[in-house]
Length: 293
Image 1 (cartoon, rainbow, N blue to C red):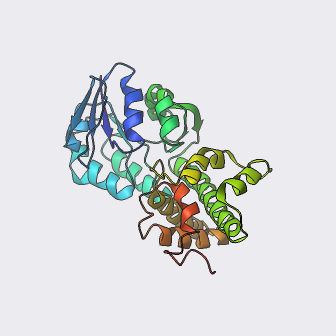
Image 2 (cartoon, helix red, strand yellow):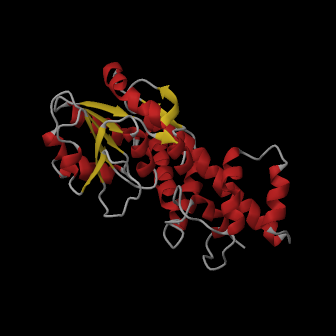
């Protein structure tokens, strides 16, 4: 059987290799031309999203946002070439209502839809140690599970479509708060006369040190913010979180401030850097808007 794949970004490139390791042929589309190194021989690249869907019983999407999903799946005509019973597995991080609307449009065509956003960055993706937040009907989820299991070591089955997206946004809200808080703390430490390494040494021995800080410490100390999870994507997820909060009347006042900070951080040269660069953004006088100093 041939499997379709749309999206070979930072995560998708590593994830598609995990799927290819199952031995089945994969047709992989990416909207931006790029050189992909060391792809298995059973992965064929295409510049046409329709080829990544035609004749495939499952097509996976790992794209940047809802606009990219719209373009690749619908505007390209890819969905028109899918055979009845095909299952679309959307692993992109999109809004709750966006995912529900995608599901409705896909299902109206006699196709299946599973949402499965994932937790983790490039290294867990390479090692097959992501966490999958899966939602959809039982039959559709079962069809996708063999492939999800090669990418994720933990799979949460969350019921109806929309629930996976909601859970992903909740997690990324806390991720955003963690990185913003660390950025502010290090800006404070610098003004108090401490270097970054000393401040991190102290924090690392405290009860307020989460795993994400340990994972990003090397980047923060070296200043090498080669992206694993870019600031602009974190900003997008915070926007989606605040929109869902407003719609559900959830009491999340801190999220508004976090979204404003991330919106400003992603409006300049920090947008394409890893989210660890937020620690530099708060301390960068050139930005001048990160905090009132």
